[in-house]
Length: 209
Image 1 (cartoon, rainbow, N blue to C red):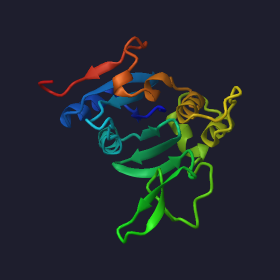
Image 2: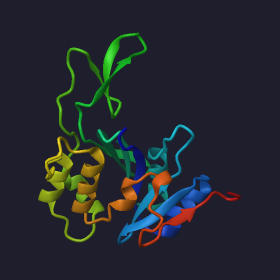
Image 3: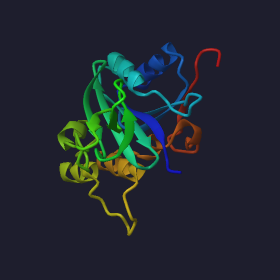
């Protein structure tokens, strides 16, 4: 079984991010991954999934800065949703060709991509990424972000070291490294948080928790 997790890259002040988490009674680890850049890793629900899109939108409303919600599934595919001012502004998908069979409301069998887009059985989406414009993601990095390296990471054009394929979490790390961010806290779920990481993560608990 592959790796699955949901995390948030938030821009802004730690106090503002902690306030949002406290206001919505969400337990999370928050770790600095760059100057004014934070990994927000909420605790998973009983099903093992952490809802990150709504939380990212709430964070942007208070910080007035962008936030990206990451969702990696079974080492196979990654979705990254960029949020600004409480709304989704851009969506990246590492592989449009990763689909599952699905039945719509009219009981028609269709193909569902990881971002929720539906396709007919006889017209599957082409493989490869979508939304992979490095100019969209470069402002989330720190320092001088190399757009060529970032573009290659978004496309999955990174060395494989003789591996048969690029795992989604490896591509995620490559994207974060191209943004000059510490990838470790953003590529682990709450249940596997690296508590010995430096700087140490801040554990935000709901009141009374």
